[in-house]
Image (tube, rainbow, N blue to C red; front, side, top):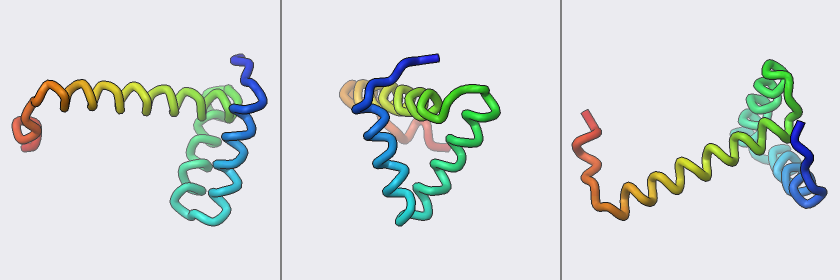
Length: 76
């Protein structure tokens, strides 16, 4: 199990509180919660893994766009 600092936990808890007013975010939180249970990990671990994946995709996309690759060749 990954040990998370209080700042990370507080940030995730704020996101959860925001989900009370945002139906789409609430559904995402529920999905992360369900997946964490199925995988036998804490909600915070699942959230961390998701954020890590999203950060990686964002970085790879930025690098791809910086190289000027045309999007149209991948859309068909």
